[in-house]
Image 1 (cartoon, rainbow, N blue to C red):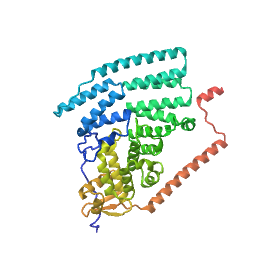
Image 2 (image 1 turned 120 degrees about the vertical axis):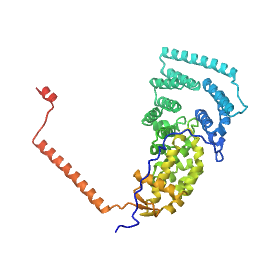
Image 3 (image 1 turned 60 degrees about the vertical axis):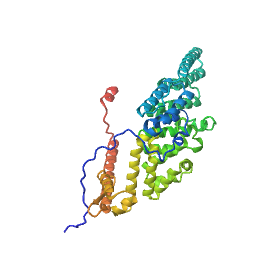
Image 4 (image 1 turned 30 degrees about the vertical axis):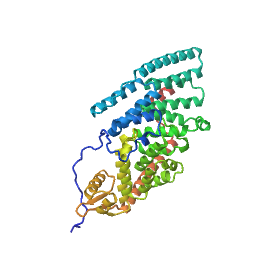
Length: 452
C-alpha cells in the first residue's frame, strides 16, 4: 500500500516570459531623496544620472531636467545636448499642462559654438605643427587636449579616436596608464564595455604598475581600474566577476566622482555579492573584509541587509531590499539589472533556508519570507522544475520534501568511474611506452618527402 502522504509532482502552466526588459517608471518617491541620488557625482556621472531620473521618475523630472540644463551650460560645450534637454523640458511641461517652459539661451549657444570652433581649429593647427616637428611628447599632449575638447562638445566617437591615437606617442609607462585611463572614461560614456575591459586589463598587466601607484598622481589607479572593470562586468551580467572587482577597491582611493562614488561601489559590490556569492564567501569576502567594510559604512542600510541575509533573517532582509528598490531602479547603471538581481537573491535565500532540512512546512516558510503559501508554492515549483532546488512538494499537506539521495550508491558509482578512468589512462601509458621502446614512428607525408 502506498503512503498517502507521498509528495506529489506538480505540473504548472508555462508562464509568460517575465525577463523581458520593460520601461522603468518610478512614481512612489516617499523613500527617495533627490539630492542624495546625485550629491556625490560630478561631470558625466552627475549629468547621466540627472537625465535618467528625468526619463524614469515623473515626480522628479522637472527638477532633474532644470539641474541638467544648468550643468550642461556651466561645465560643458555640448550645444546639442543643451538644446535636446530644453526640448525635453518644454515637452514635459506641455504634456502635463505646466506653464514653466524655458527658452534657449541663444547668446550662450552662439558664444559657445564660436568658442568651440575656434578651439578646435587651434588644437588641430597645434597638432599639425607638433607632427611636423616630430616631437612625440607634444603630439601626445595635443591628442589628449583635442580629445578632452571633443568630449566636452559631446563628440564622443572623435574623442575616443583622439585618445587612442595618443598611444603611438607614449614614451613612458605613465603615458600608457594615462592613455588607458582616458580611453576607459570615454568608453564608459559610449557604453563600449568590451573596450573598457580591454584597456583595464592592458593597464593592470603592466609590470611597472606597482611603481606607478606609489606616485601621488596615480595612487588611485588600481582602484579606478578595478571599479571600471566591475562596471563592465556588471553591464554584461557577470555578477560574480563584478562583485570581485568592486571588492578589490580601496576606499581612500575612490575619488573619481565623474565615474563612480564610494556609495556606488558599496551598492554595486554589495548587491552583486548577495546575488552571486555563497554564504561562506559572503562572510569572508564582504562581511569580514576590512577594506570593503569602509564602503558599507557609507551605505548602512545595505550593510544591515547583508548581515540579515547571512543571519537567515530573510523576512527583514527582503523587506529592506524592497524599500531600497526604487532608488536602485533610478540608478543609471544598476537599473537594468535590479529585477534579475532581486530574483537571484530571493531564489538563493529560498534554497539556503531549505538546505538544512529534509522536510519543511510551507506555512512556516511563507511566514519566514513574508509571503503567502500559494505564492511561495508557485516560486518553489518553478525552482524545482529549473533544477535549482532538489525537492518535491506535497501540495495537499503543504510540505516541501527533499529528494532522497542514496549517498552510498553515489559513492560506489563515483569510485567505479574513477577506476575506469585510471584503467584507461594506464593502458594508454603502457601502449605509449611499448611504441617508444620498439621505435614505431608514423611519419607524415610532408616529413617523408623532406627526408627523401
